Image (cartoon, rainbow, N blue to C red; front, side, top):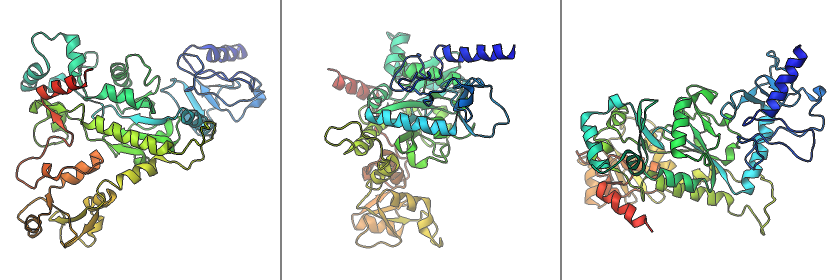
Length: 462
């Protein structure tokens, strides 16, 4: 009876639609594990083995589907000590051995590189969207929503399409899409295999994925939520079937990526709603309260897309020689090194001195985070002013160094100028970050009002 049950489960695992299936016992052709059950370039396959149907071909077992070996059909022994990689976002019951995961990553990398693609992992909250509870939206914000994003003639579908605002009734959330997000995803998908990765719930991740990708062509089954992550508090590339040297991460929080900071493009948080703005103790008005939003032409996502294209070009530059496209990846190109090289040129040529940013008693000022950030961006730092200093970073323009900068016609800037350089990956205009008593810009990105946004759309229309 147990044998019949085992055979039944094995047959179910092999024939279940939209679920991973094990390979056929042949070295000539492999059956892929794909969301639609069809063979395609993005599918994963278990390792070839002419004796794949024989029980003695295992161990080691390449992986399990609901506790059944995907090669031999044996039930998993829970005394087995070999570590496994859970791929629950592909299928709830799928896990593969570390060795098999590495083999799959190597195979997937070769397939992606032949298509001249890298991997891009995208956070959701504050990166692509801003979501808040309806109970956190003030009456003033509701008036702003009506005045800025709707007219009396607007219908709900048009409201969603033009403004990017969605009411997720089942989740009781208002969600605002970041400007340019649809174009960003469309263009990025030409160069990268896209993944969504959030510490939110599965229902939230899937709902937002349907809004961002109604056809399912951009993300496929590559939507990872907290339930599919290997940790409930951090994110990790171990759940991806991608090689770290070919993966970029776009996220607003560095702390959730403790092992992959070098892969990370830290994006400025998108705070559209006031409650989101206040949650992070941001000063000034939110974008909604200010009656503005990020520019689609020159906002955060538009500028990030330029950076992604730059990294992609640098990675594949010289990869194919003489039109040959059958090379295997030799590991020489690494997106982490490319990011570091690009970042180190942002403030090259600048010589920075700080005024009352840290105590003069600090034994090693070069250990201060702002000092290190400036050097990371390619500038040099100095303790004292001299003829070579180009910028004085200060909170008070009345300091000796601040007065010197004004008298010598040097740039006197607020520390946010350094933060802006870090987030935008380019040297910001110093005039936008003066040392003054008034609050600086709400965001580092260019913002536009309703009329300016309309003009942008008119300019882009054919």
